[in-house]
Image (cartoon, rainbow, N blue to C red; front, side):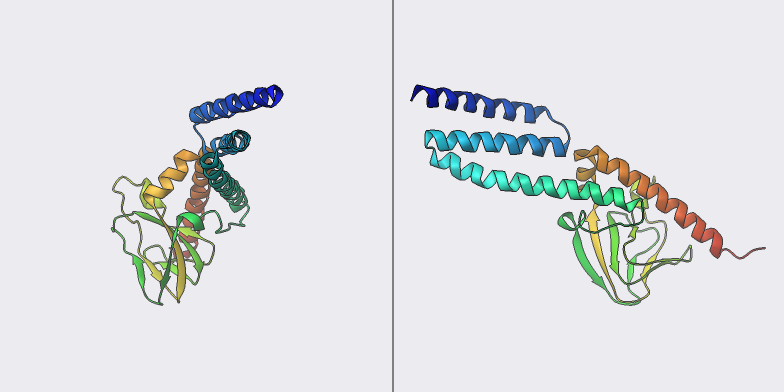
Length: 208
């Protein structure tokens, strides 16, 4: 009996220590990882002392933290793959809203307030002022977040029926600060898009 009690005490202190360490972690993936180990230790401790409320609490928190950890890892994987041109929507879907647009519908106009970033799931989007058209899998609308006026730099029009995912600036900012690795890859992706848009605009400019 004493042996079991000693192990329960050690387990309880371990669970408490993991919770304290998790409180000092600033980025999301290490935080979720520490929370998973803490939940396992606390669940085991609750089972050992026969605490039903503890068992219920950590039986809920453990799978929740595992799901969130998996989402964050998949998000980072998708952002990395985006640099090779294989961008996937899975990282954005849990945080985004879906919207359908008809052919000819204006998503936003030049000068509108830029409060959302978009991803085109299917269809085509044309940017009127720069004569550039994009297809499925492309991000757009993010540049407004980085302009001084915080406004759209071009008008986006659906050239055919389209489906979009959109994420608000607040949610995007949360993801950025929660995971610096995500933020870094997003910056690189935006820089790549700027270069691509500049090349497309240059190619579409008639020679003098």
